[in-house]
Image 1: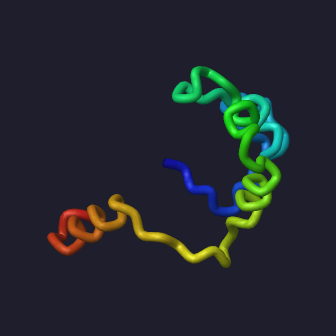
Image 2: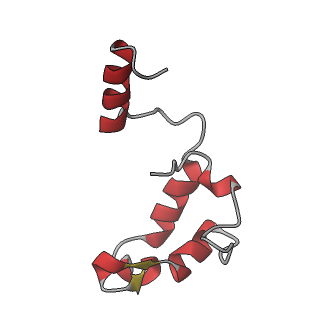
Length: 83
């Protein structure tokens, strides 16, 4: 899964660069689990501005959370399988 680290600074977004801002992604990207609705339509009852502000805040100062992938990679490294 791609990282969200500094996502606000990596425009354009989406496969062919259709979105010039993170906010544009909300209006263009569809979610299969939401019946094909866009992100904007799927989160209309919550606070899209707060989500956008949160995404823009993820940068090098954001604490990193370990994932299952990190644990898996560490286990391989301890066995000498992965560098």
